[in-house]
Image: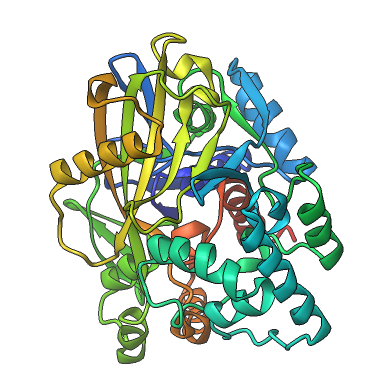
Length: 438
């Protein structure tokens, strides 16, 4: 018997691949329904997700699996998009990534940036140390001006920590790093060039991101027990105690946040307690807003570095799918606000008012009267903080768990910055490993 903790996208994918192999397993999910953060809400004709969940697929295997085997086989229509994302800075919209589109910046600023970039490339500094500060790395890569105006304020709002505490280990996939030639091209020409892992993405035509989760669940043969509260895990005897039951496992596949898993382990060794207390994260408030369509630009999302506004990103569901709103006269948005991971509850009503005021100030909303629906979701685990402790201890804690037949995978189980495709691949690789298939 295999036990899977968490019924989000990673846990459900594990169940899917176990089902294909005829394995006996159960999935334990503490919420009343499946999906974790990969789910949707339906409010007064608007479809909202737990923030924007786009389906980015860079491998042919995963593309075929998700689009053909899961979605199309379950009659789920999808739309393929070429990413249209911008940065709102200097009171203008600049194509993402800003470092590749200097043409769009005010002249004095872009001239200063290109001068700094020439100097950096003529006198390159080494930044290949795994634990180097993100702040130092970004300045060496992009120069002091771009760091000051974009990378510093934006990342402070996302990570909610001193950027000197953040390493640059997460940047390879998520921060485009143009060559000097590409910097120059973006300086002299307004022609936009695509960078990054999410240049193209898919989204269900109807049903929000829950359509993907529902498609996976239809092919699961094992038991999914929702509203199940795991009380303790006896890792020596390989027993999970939940509600008023217990189950013995051959292997435990964990997809819930790593600190929560460690808190459930009976008689956790002192060393692991020390490690657990040094795993940090940031939380996110997702304010979903349904409103009359007052912003008619065909953008998917906008990054907001300006310190004046609490939110760091605004996305548009109606530009993902026209069926996410009651009619073409409406728009649906997700607005993300980062807070420290262990911060006590804040005044949600006040936060909502600040967000609406900010959207009006930027010009996305015309007035408060345009707002039809405000739906606020709290995401306790938003981003894993890549500090020196994570780099030092993550391998050790995952090794300890693996030695005791506990395997922690996915975005929060693996304690990393990842996306849907990577989580599905994690699940597939885990099942292959457990069944000794490669």
